[in-house]
Amino acid sequence: AGTGKGATSAEGAAEAARPLPRGSSQDLVVGQRVYAIGNPFGLDHTLTQGIVSGLGREITSGTGRPIYDVIQTDAAINPGNSGGPLLDSDGKVIGINTAIYSSTGTSSGVGFAIPIDPITSFVDQILRYGRITQPVLGITFAPDQLVDELGIEGVLVLNAIDGGPAWKAGVQATTRDSFGRLVLGDILVGINGTDVKSSLDLYRVLNKLSVGDIASLNVIRGNAKQDIRVTLMDSNSLKPKINVQTFMLPGDFGEEEDREEGLP
Image (cartoon, rainbow, N blue to C red; front, side, top):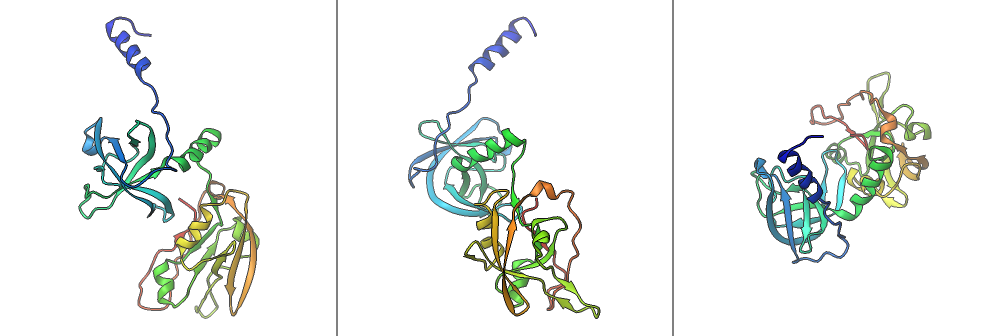
């Protein structure tokens, strides 16, 4: 350990530092005062204030999964604020600043924070497993826009990853026959009694499930509907990922990348 005045100052600062108290996002109301802490544009220890301007918002993560019940605030949030706490007037953490709605990349008065309550379960997973466990079916699927252009309502399975839950359950992938013609795979139209019209509908259900849960899938195969039971697997157990063939679907769409459900 160091000695002298500098070491004493550092030790004093460490003793003075203490974690922020954790609040709850369950009882938030529109109009209540909030404060955002972060390092916007590299300006550390910045505090901005505003109000809760909306609740129950839905935003899409970088992996395509929707994030629900997001807090909307007009407290200035800019690049560098992400990951910083959103506090209530008692100084308790009620959310984690994560995104803004802006055409310029800077604050336009519409910022978003992930509520603290669901984050608690993620922290517990990190402490227990060293990472966040994420339940997946182990499929890749066509982009929603292409499926809409084909006049299909549901999620078109492009591939069931070898060894994954869907593969084990017999979910059929999209293929080509000996003449090169496209043979559509299973079309997922329901999961656990909930209709699936797009990938967001699928994610909404998956986000509420856990690794090891059984998902009941309703699929259209050919001209008939089938029910398939799938035991969800941890996304990390499917790594390393494999390269999946990209299909060019009929129409003037060019070549589109398929989406990898549940995989980062």
